[in-house]
Image 1 (cartoon, rainbow, N blue to C red):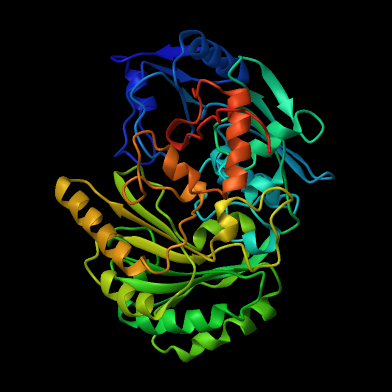
Image 2 (image 1 turned 60 degrees about the vertical axis):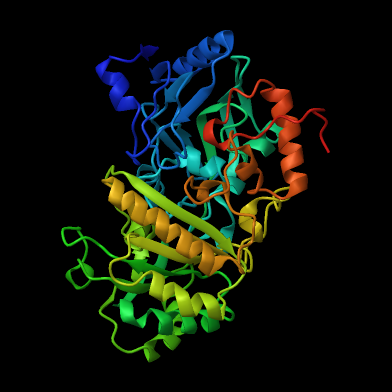
Length: 454
């Protein structure tokens, strides 16, 4: 086990991630290369009663770790595909693009999100609602089994046959119950999709939002879709028509035939003046091309909210908030999985994803204090726009620190990502598997006082 402290060159590298605005300062960093390294790190932390933070890519970080042990799992690789059982077994450091490349060879796919550089394990443990969620459900539903190191230092495989309660908790409960070293995910027979985006000048935002609200009520149930507001930098590796030009886009992903997908989006032909259309039949391994998210490690401030509707107020005020010059370079209003073909897996309808008709997410690059203040002010403006439509229950992987109600420990905001009964059961399992609250990091579930399962 490679162990690093302040002053070590490797310590500095391990303490940062995709969002460089958040820099960890733990007592120890562990560069795990194997499950055994993770086991040794957990034993060290448990013996000294040190909190444990786990990081692979750093995409989901909410707050810096300032004590304890940071376990970097990016070095634990390996992808093994069982095409007969349609199962992928992956190491904790595997990213989505690696898995999608491997599954494509067998005409299979995993339920990835919009950004292929994201780590698979963290995304899956937090729920994960990607472009295929309305057809197949959440990525967490696809967890078949996991090797996990629990706070007692033991490595164990959990499944429906071995410790099913712990497996249930892992499916959406984040890193609160152990450190996952290997994950087995069920795959879907979805090698191809019809997907992409149609772009218009930002001045067409109100018209597109109005058309989208009407369309989404009757669009194909399996269709993943979103309206996005984008300001790609002039140097971004994107098509010329949208490089450096504020734009609004319809994003789609349809798991059916190209003919059905084209027919479904015909109403948007009535909106004249489109500047780019990237919709096409594509291998699912290329799904990152829909959003063209930046893989660069940069300082960022984000915004997220779950909404019950696209109201007149949102249509009237959101385009104004996101006109040219907005501090947010990308924002997206996406349909949630509810209302699609898929339904929540048994026992998991209490995840916040399933009560969120729409998910709104945005990101600002903040290289200096002025950019930070502009992003925070934009967040306050969006709070006012969304106040009447806010659900109150969001999704665990959509939590962001700057615009989410915050208590001293962060546990109150985590509770908002579950329905009360679901959270109560998670809290009871937390009491059983991590009574000292050493796991969970910035998405901590509070151990219940009784530890009794509902």
